[in-house]
Length: 522
Image (cartoon, rainbow, N blue to C red):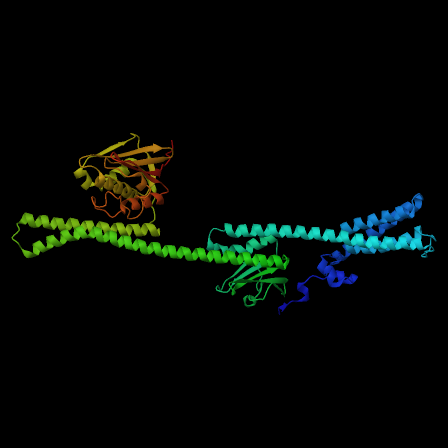
């Protein structure tokens, strides 16, 4: 059974032994006789008290043997010793020490010597002044010590709260925040095991528990509480911290002893609520942004495909209609119409293949088969797929005579060169050649494709590898979907390489991508 507000969940208040009651606790003065069921604190208190009595005895013995000091000197010496004891050991030791010092002062230094009897009223005034001064001095010294200790504890708690908030904010992934919160509480505040329960989740996030033991922690149904409350379990005392936001229960935090103060736990709960709400806001914003981008991508894809499907479909429709009308075409004329239909169908098939390939690259569904291939083999394989371009213009090859080996997936890497060559063919001036070059740069091989076209404006260079983006001045002059460069960039990134473009308006553009080199043994 769990019992809220159980006596075992609270520390014993020893100042009640001295009759100080509630006022002592409110004043911040703590006693040095803590009781926790262990003999060690009691032995510590007894040792301190015996040390105080020993100090009084040594002072009395010293002045009795010296015989040169008067009552005032002895009184000030005892008073100084009591003040030092109250500063170091607390009020309880100083109070009992002042009683012993007062009795010794009366017995050994006030006439009649050797008796607990005072014959002169002035000695009575001196004795009472000693008692009052000792009590007030010990109280003030203990109060100053307690205030300094409280201030240091608050400073440490503030530093820990700052460290805790910094850790919460530095957690990158919102999904990993809930697992990290209990661990951060233990590491920062040096507490016992910690549970985090949320009302909208069935999982309980643990930290610090022994995995070999079952049934640890606090049941989740105790999450809703009016404030920080203590609950006793079979293992230890647990502090329950409710988590609330806008009058709604988010869950609770269960901190096992040793635990910080209730005020600090309330601050910890507030920071956790802010962090959880922030993580949820980030997740919601990410989902909304992903939905918006998906809708925008669908719209752009449909628009681009519709625009590029229009021209081949018009040619196919016209040729098929002419054949169906049987206008007396000859064999050669019918063959030309059928070739046109076949070419436009291939064009549509390439458009669909490009869109499908882009979708697979974005989803990470394409796996690379990496192997060592020479630069010549990669360029030759790409040129074999560019026969249509070779029929229109000349392709010049440049590079080092000694071929280098690169680590690449040949079937995908050749597509990058094919896209760059076809892109250069579309935008180059008719009759001008395309230059393909391969050269080693550090531990990479740079493959470059240069054209002699109109070039690209500097403001557009940063966007040409985006999906479906096309240059403003070329959208109506050259047919295309804007997927070729985006596919090429995605393939290069999958290889761990980079791709870039430089251009000078009026002189042409150079597209370069890099693949890692394979070191050959000597």
